Amino acid sequence: MKRASVQHPRSGLRVRCEKGVEPAVRQSCLNFAVWLRSTIDFPIRVVVYLKKDYQIKNRYSKELVSATFFAPYDKAIEPYIRIATGDYEELVSERGEIDALWALLGSMAHEIVHY
View 1 (tube, one colour):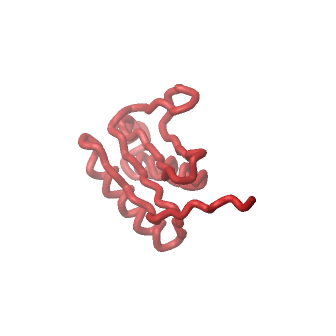
View 2 (tube, rainbow, N blue to C red; view 1 turned 45 degrees about the vertical axis):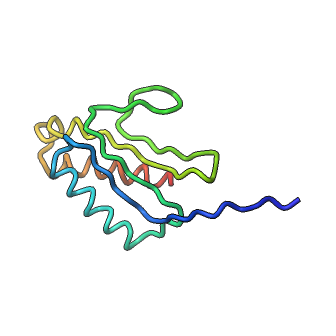
């Protein structure tokens, strides 16, 4: 018996930003997404949600994390990434603005690898 393959009507990488996320973080992530789309094929749509929270709860383990990737078992459901950006100001004071942005972009890149 041949299993029917699921067709994904949407492809690509999208970024959605919650109100309250620092504008510098938002713009850096949007710029990174533009570059990623020019470099990597995203055959199944994945959305990156930028959250204003300091940490977010992992969907399965319920632990607090800075970023997470959700890959659904049901192939008809699209995957997504959530990035907590609430520690940006703290990172700026510890590392400076450029390194703080690199830290958040590193989290985004890490989750894209799971995709």
